[in-house]
Length: 104
Length: 500
Image 1 (cartoon, rainbow over the protein chains, first blue to last red):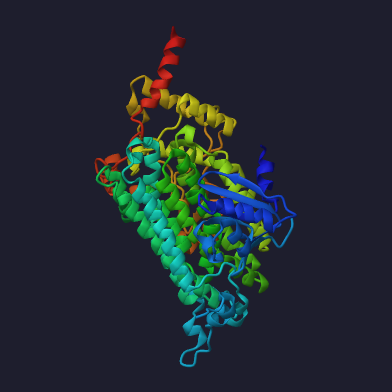
Image 2 (cartoon, rainbow over the protein chains, first blue to last red; image 1 turned 60 degrees about the horizontal axis):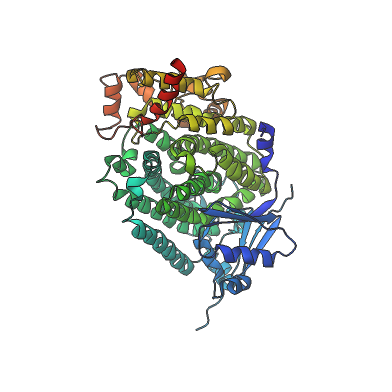
C-alpha cells in the first residue's frame, strides 16, 4: 500500500459500533441487519472486538434487540460492551444511532 | 411506580447554569480555568452531549462492567496463563501498567477540572461520570498487576514508575502534565477527551486487546476493553465543545489544540503500543501490524470523525503518516539497546521469522533497521554481548523526552531539528515536535530532559550506574532481553552451515 492510500484512508463513510467479545454481539449483528434493511452490514471479527458497520447511518432499536436477545433490554446496557464506535452517536431510550453529517 | 423515560426529564435536570449574585461571573469562572476563549456562557447552553447517561444508569452499568472484569480475573486466576505466556507478552503487561495506571489519576484530575469549570452544564455533567471512570481505571489497573508482584518485582512499577525519574516515566509525565494536568476545562475537552480518547486510547485498549485475546490472555483483553467502554462514553465530551468553538469563530484555536494533542499522543502510543504490537507480541499471535491498527483506528475512524465535526487534517498529516513506517521501529531499537533503563524486559523480536514478517509488513525493513540488528546479532553470536550494551547518551527530544531517532541504514534520515530560544539550544525529533514548542515556549522552556540533567551534573556518578540510581532502578528491576538472548541461536545454525 502506498503512502497516499494510507493518508487517504479517512475518506470513508463507515459508521457503527465496535463491540467487545460479548454475549450480545450476535444479537446486535442480527438487529443491525433488521433495522437497516437497505444497507450492507459489514462485520469484522477481531475476537477481542467486533467491528459492525455500514455506510452513512446505522440504527439499533431497543425493540429489535429485545427480539433478537429474547429478553428485555435497556438501551443503556449497550454501553457495557460498546468498546468504541465509528461515526457520531445519538443515544435515546429507544434507539442508538451512528452517523456522519457529511458524506465524503 | 412508573418512572419517566430519561428523555422526559434529562434536559430540565441538566439546566444548571445560573446567574451569580455574590460574585462576578469572571470570578466564578475565570478565563484561565474555563478556557472559553471569550465565548460567553450563554453560547455554551447549546452544548448537547451526544452520549448520555444518568446517575442511576451509570451506577448500574459500571457495577456490571466491574463484575465482568473481576469475574474473568477470578475465573482465570488459577490457570497458568501468566507462567506460560511468552516473556515478551509479560513485558507488554509491565510496560502498560507502569505507563498507564497512574496516568489515569492525571486524567481524573483533568475531568474534575471540567466538572468545576466547564461552561456547559452538559459538559460538567458528563465529566462527573468521566472523573469516576478515570478513578476506576487507576484503581483496577493497580489491582490487577498487584497479584504478580510476588512473582516478578518489575510489576511493582505499575505503581512505582510515575514516582521515579526513569526516562520513560519522565516522557509520560511530560505529555500528561501538558495535556491533562495544566490545561483549562475547554482545552481538556478538546485535547484529552476528543484527541486523546476518541483517537489514540483505542490503539492501546482495543487494538492491543485483539493481540491479548490471540495470546490467550483473556483477563487483560477483558480488562482493557472494559476500560475503553468508559472512554467511549466520556470521550464524547469533546465533540460538542469543538462545535461551540467553531460556531463562535474559534476554529483556528480549536484546530491548534487538536493538532498539538494528536502530535503528543502519537509519540506516546508510538513508543508504547508500536513495539508491543510489532516486537513483543509473539509472532503467531499478532492480529495486525501496528501500522494496520493505526490505519484502522486513527486514519479510518478518528480522522474521519474530526472532518465531520468541521475540523481539518493536522498540518503535519503527511509527515505523521510517513512516520507510521519507521518511527516505532527506531524506538524499538532504542528500547532494546538501553534495556537496563527499563522496568520491563524488551523482546528483541527479530528472529529470522520475525524479520520476514517485518519485511512483509514494512517493505525495506531489512535494508534499514535490519542492518543494525545484523550488527547486534553478530556481536551476540561472537560472544561479545558488551558491544550490545549502551555506553553513551542519546540526544533526547526536548518535547517528547524520547531519544531522537529515525531510519538507519540505506534509508538514513536521522536529523536533529534544533531551535535556539532565549539563549538555550533545544533539540527536537521532528518539525512537528519543534512546532509544538513554538506554540507556547514559556510552557516548555524550563524543562530539562534526562540528558540535560546529566550535563548539568545532577546525576552522579556520571555514567550508566549513576543514571540507573537516578532512575531508581534496583537490581532485579532493570530490564534485560526478554528471552535471555535465546533468539540468537536461531541464527547460529545457518551461519555455521554457510561457513562450511
